[in-house]
Image (cartoon, rainbow, N blue to C red; front, top):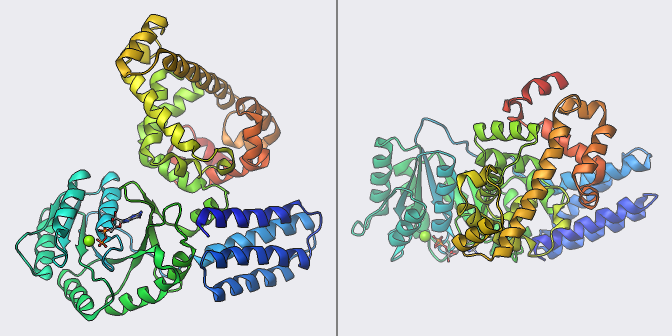
Length: 498
Ligand code: GDP
Ligand code: MG
């Protein structure tokens, strides 16, 4: 069973529980069995599934009688037990600023090491780290070319050799070159073999003792399922594995077996690969993962993504504008550009609670296509048009259509959409500014806030997001986020509200 299907099955089981008036052992067992079946079909180890059931059962026995409360508590224990399934005891390596962090990648041939090295390098480089790649794979023909091409695509400096056949020597030279040049993250891609064998383990040990890595990352293909457990242990015997990256967890992959098996080896999973493109790469965190799987959204992850793409100034500027109710076409362009930078749209949308149910299948593909088209049109506008200083009449719309290779009516459509947005923002301005705007006010008088909110967000979407209660929870989660206090305007109010 693929992951989305697993999530749906668990959601269904939980919903059934929520809808019933009473909750007894029989109902609990039905729910647990449905969840267990889904987990087993997703290739999760039978013992693990059993112990998950036991845990929830024994927690249920200790719960108090209040039905409403009980439902919540059962739900919480299910979520927690699922999270535990994916959590390892060991903490992952934390990158140190102002130091050369040497990261060595190991794994079998074809597991996705070289691709993952590039994704990993790209991830940190985008965050502003100085990153270099070293190709120490002399086993596979063309390995250096592959890394070189990947690195060039992402504009990441690389080191390797066509003539040197000793991987230890290349690794040492590459690392020391990048160290001298004060690179902060030096990534070493090593060779693999088709199967676990002594030659591979010997080479790994030699390279590792030569470069003394800060962290060793084991790359594993999710398709081997539960076998991940034994493979991780075998590699860990040869060198000290710090963290794991699971690859090929694309939409149609089973994945449950691999993800749960790794946690049992005590090596934390830090990223997952979800496709061949360099953007198909996600930070892995059991809490976010389970919440998204269950359609509960991932506010923390979303906030991190937003912080990634919005600079401090941009955040301030936007907050200021929204509070004044101003929203120009240029602002819309900025928003769209930022959304596109956050990565695949479906992944971003799934972080919003309830979105999984709103978005029609494949809808996000259409949406990204549309956004790209809009961005083209906006590129054909003048500065005055973007700033809404010049009105866009039919003849201007025709010019924009010609300039961007779109149809005149498409430009009109974009203008309609812009008007809708700007109306929402001007209403939001009323919501945020003045007497009743800040977050503490929401807490003091949630009903009044929600009434206003209802006039901004369409009712059907509000319902899907868990209604007023859901939005309140989201607000609370937002308040607890680190970094939120740094946004001016929220700072004072946030402190007062505490
Ligand atoms: P290596 O031998 O371990 O270095 O593996 P490579 O990086 O050369 O990858 C082997 C193949 O797996 C390549 O065709 C990659 O494009 C593909 N690949 C790597 N990661 C992923 C992933 O997350 N999803 C998918 N679908 N393919 C991947
Ligand atoms: Mg490779």
